[in-house]
Image (cartoon, rainbow, N blue to C red):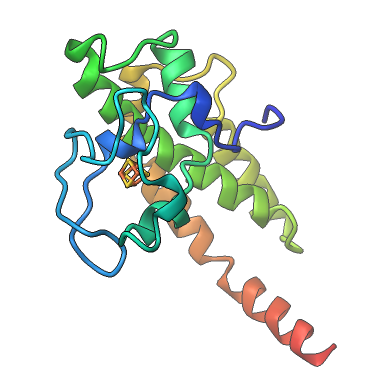
Length: 178
Ligand code: SF4
């Protein structure tokens, strides 16, 4: 996996999280926003207009959200730096690709963390196989991302992560006994 792949770089992204994702009015978001509609706080410069006051203004969810590098990857690698703002016809595929890439990066992050656990050789092999699927040498395209969402891979990753619960319990126990 490339260094920095899972680190968000908002300056290289077309504000995909502020448009592509839906949120519901709650303790974390001040109003209901459907997916594919720009947040009313998003400026025409692509920056959040209330960034320094997100929590005070009722948008703690934005503070906690981390795209894990999916946003700039979709913007730069799949859409060559273009934006849904200048090319509205691209919006739907950009947001679909972002949703799928966010899941890919979340899985990569979890599997990376899993590498620090004392895995059995069978678990280590399974982890490596899943990492190869999630980080293909040829990269991702809008088509392969959609195919990924519809494939068995998300279920396979979740099932594998479930098998690691014992390790996490043992790690916690050993930390408590230190
Ligand atoms: S409040 Fe700001 S950071 Fe949150 S979705 Fe809206 S524009 Fe983006």
